[in-house]
Amino acid sequence: MGNKSRLYFAMLFFSLFAIYFLIVNIYAPEFADDYVNSYIRGTSYRMTTFADIIKNTYLVYIGWTGRFTSSFLMYLSIYAGDMFFNVVNTIVIILFFFLVSLYINSKEVKFDNIILIVFLFWFGLPVIGETVFWTTGSIVYLWTTVICLLFMLPYRYLFGEQSTPLDKYPKFSALLMAFMGFITGGTVENFVPVSFLAIVLFYLYLRTKKKMIPGWFYSGFLGLFVGFPFLVLSPGNSIRAKVEGVENFNRFDISRIYYFFTSVLKDIYLHQFILVIFFLVLVVLLFVMKILRKDKSSFINEKQVLLAALFFIMSVLMQVIMIMSPYFPLRTSFIGAVFHLIAIVILYNYIKQIINNRVVNIILSVGLLIPLTFSLNIVLVQYKTLHQQTNERMQIVSQSVENNIKDVILPKYSVVEHPTFDQGSRHVFIRDITEDTKNWTNEVFSKYFNLNSVRTVQSQALETEIDFKKSISIYSSDFEFNKSFILKDIRYFREGSTLTFYFQFDPKTNTEIFSNKVLYFHAYLTESDLEKYKGKEDVQYGFINWDIVPDVIRTPNNLILVKKTVNTDLDHFPKISIGIYDYKNGNEGQSLEVTDITLKEF
Image (cartoon, rainbow, N blue to C red):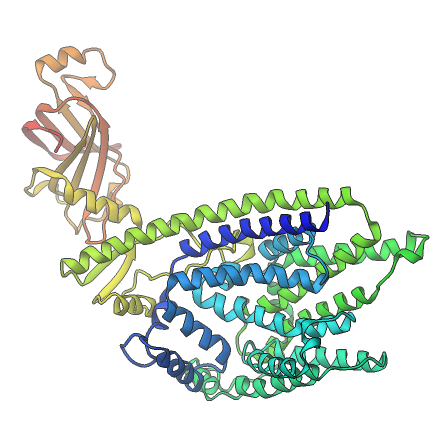
């Protein structure tokens, strides 16, 4: 395959992934953080101008966090709208893949390298639903990681003695790298100190080799050095610490340090176990090859091994440095995991050059593509379901507002987030409203959609109540089977031959007493229908037996319902008889009879 063919194939592959990630971004719902960030901080007014973006960036800097780079990008993206984020986030994801491939080899983008990068990105990085697809999380972690990779790329090229476009324009390059260093200094706290160390090591290496060091090398370092204090010395950091009650935590407490190394780091690397396994396998493979291979001349360009080792050490330091933070959310390990990924792919590419077997490359690529394709499809279905259910919620909210209903009940999502490794997929992120109207996520949602309150209920309960209200009553008076069972209404809904009955009980009914009970339901037939159904198993003593083992549903508005669905073409019954039957004691209390019932479709 020629260079042009490889380029076209890589472009096709990038295009397919771009389409996939764009669709997932469109499907991914917004949550409370995204809503609250649409307002001018501390007010009830939405951002309407670019000046509001600058104002919000400043207000959040002095009132919450020093991450000025991600704050500006977040407010810009939310101001620009959903489609802006969906398109830009897709571009950033593809740019991430491309940048990582450039860290391996600047001369060409190879198909098998891209497959490995995407595979490790998908299965190896922690909670990518939160750090890649969620609006706020993606900007804070993925976008800033790409900025960090862009900033470090020229240093990596210089280490590999490779030319860059920066070399042609020294003055412009110095200014550009100073700016990139400054905004990189305002990204994430666990990257910047480690990047200082990496740049110092690059400097020492270049001085040892007596290589010329360009001006952008120093200006980039200076920009990073200036930007970092803005990040860590922000007034907002101390205010946030007070709000969250961690302003006086002891960073050097022995028990806390022990907990970090025995529990937090364990959890971090458990979520990166794919990266750990790949790295260990490659290290062992390289070690074995060194011992067994007689032709040592094939072990060329060992600078790649040094580079892989450097990025691995950087990744570990980025995780360990989090001991200085009062809390350790898993999403903060994202950038460290990215450098772990880069170390793996550099090491893989080095070993691949030694083996130099195209068949092995193809087999490995196909072997990685199969589980990747299955997982991508599963996650796409989950996000599609979330999207459909979000649209259903928005219809309920819209109809409620139109009818001046300010207290809204929404069905829960059927898709469940799995944030821990042992529970499954980490590709779906949900920070949903709850059953508690006073929860901060509920209050933010209510404010954004101009409601008094909002809460969630199980989808089945809400759907049942909606269907119940659409149905037609055939009996609407209190009937006391006994003191424990008081029937208030019987309704039906017919669609073709499908007939659904709803039995509403008193809201004070203890639903637990329905256990070991049967709600017997006998529908008596006309003489002509009886002749037609004669000999059928469910026809006894002149009636059809539609007995119900109650699956009691308590709806959002505290309706106690029992539901029964049957298939029948019959639409007229001289009488129906309903009562309570106990397995041990037989019939309990009185039975209800309703006469001359016609059940037409409407």
